[in-house]
Length: 150
Ligand SMILES: Cc1cc2nc3c(=O)[nH]c(=O)nc-3n(C[C@H](O)[C@H](O)[C@H](O)COP(=O)(O)O)c2cc1C
Image (cartoon, rainbow, N blue to C red; front, side):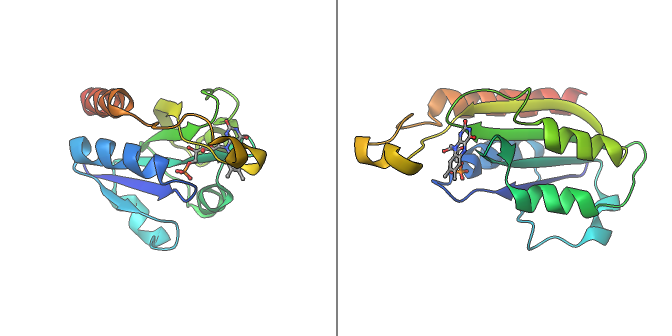
């Protein structure tokens, strides 16, 4: 199964750590929205879309990229994120709906907490210090192992 991961991670590179753990198991390439060529998409059986959560959504560069994708058939996708507050049902809604409208089958979704120093939090040492931690990375690996079984 040929897999690709799209990643945008900038705040503390939290989501990059999760992407690396997943990519290792899937033997997937990781690309940023800037590195990707839309015509390459058809080559991959499984595509992951991941970023931190900003304003209750994945980063707009991932959403914009998903918007430009050609329609596909029989292609699988997964969504992953890190956030201040663990929540994926609503935070993944926008990307989930775009991908489904392109014909992708969303096979699974992953979220865990990530270190956050947004806004006033920086004055108090931030929240979720040390996350993602070793357990989060282990959970991400297990998530990826399950993707291989689908
Ligand atoms: C501008 C900004 C907006 C954020 N908005 C949210 C949010 O709506 N919900 C949430 O749970 N976390 C929010 N966070 C926290 C980030 O999702 C969290 O720190 C994440 O792990 C950052 O991922 P990254 O290091 O991969 O960029 C926000 C952080 C920033 C900097």
